[in-house]
Image (cartoon, rainbow, N blue to C red; front, side, top):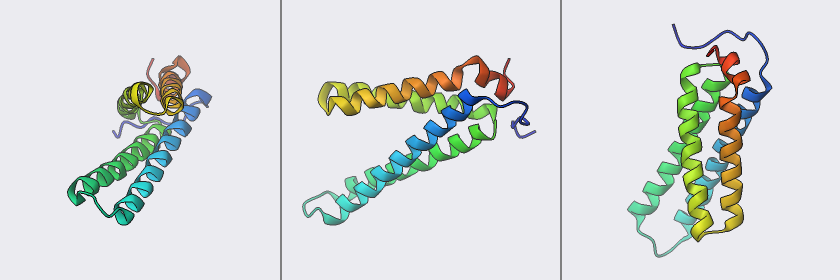
Length: 131
C-alpha cells in the first residue's frame, strides 16, 4: 500500500492548498536563483556560507515541491509535512514582522495560515480519506 487514495470526490480546498504549496515551492526556487546570482556577483563573501545557504534553499524548494505533488496525489502521509512547512513559514513571517520588511512578513503569515487551513479543513480530510 502506497498511502495514496483513489480520487473519490473533488475537494477545492485541497486543490487550492496544493496550488499554494506549489506557489511556495516556486518562491523558494526564485530565492535560490537570486542567491546563485548573489554568490556569483558578490566579491567579498564567505564561499562556504554562501554555498550552504544556496543549497539549503534549493533543497527546500525541492522538498516543498515533492510534498505538494504527494498531497496533490492524495497521499495522506504528505499532510503532516505540508503543515510543518506552514509552521516554518509562520515563524519566518513573524521574524520579518520584527526585523525585516513588514509587508513580506504579513504576506508570509497570511499565505501560511490560509494554506494550513485549506489543508486541514474537513473537505480536505474527506478527499484524503481521513474521517
